[in-house]
Length: 247
Ligand code: NAD
Image: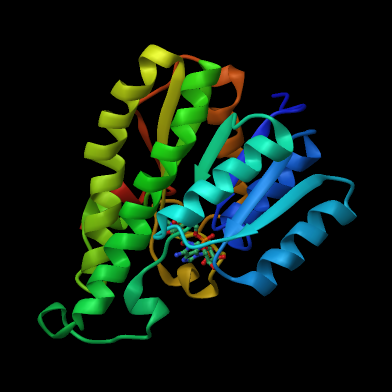
């Protein structure tokens, strides 16, 4: 799985799964461009990769803001000359981010907007802009980060579940159809509980544990490598068997 001289653009790259993937790609010789809304964490992430001998740059930006999206994609091309892989990792549950414990009929409308905008519109914006460069190159791989919540629903995270479901079904398949004539592959990875957050250890899986972030990163590196060259339009559940547990 060689990523030598490839350019990887990672949204939400300042922490969690995005940052870990950034470290792994950099170790494999790739150029990594991280985009994140959190300026301090982004700076630390870029420094961390560089300190290990990797090549990384950061663009502070909000995936909901198209000018930020364009600026990040332009920066990847002007700095590194291509966009070979786009990982759409930025995301999260509005109820967790805003510490909201209300039932859906009482949710503030701005939480619903945040959940849809960050988890669905952001990846749609980024994929559109990155695809322009990938079409020019006649190659590329786009990964959408879904969630088990997009498959099984979640009464406490309705907007998140709806956005992830739309992302990993309708958008994934549509984008795979758009990309195929240009040799652009599009895949989704839908994790179950991942230990980027300790509370995820409470969530049940068939394997009796939550995933280490490395287990998600390893799979992402595989599907974005040439070893997965015939894979497109597929949503992979990396959930320790949770989606086939009997209730
Ligand atoms: P994380 O919270 O560690 O990282 C998300 C990053 O996105 C943060 O650095 C944050 O600053 C950034 N971000 C948030 N809003 C942004 C915006 N508007 N613009 C730019 N950056 C923004 O999350 P994680 O646990 O690494 O999860 C990564 C992805 O995997 C997410 O899409 C998440 O929904 C999905 N996922 C995670 C789990 C889990 O258990 N951790 C399970 C299923 C799916």
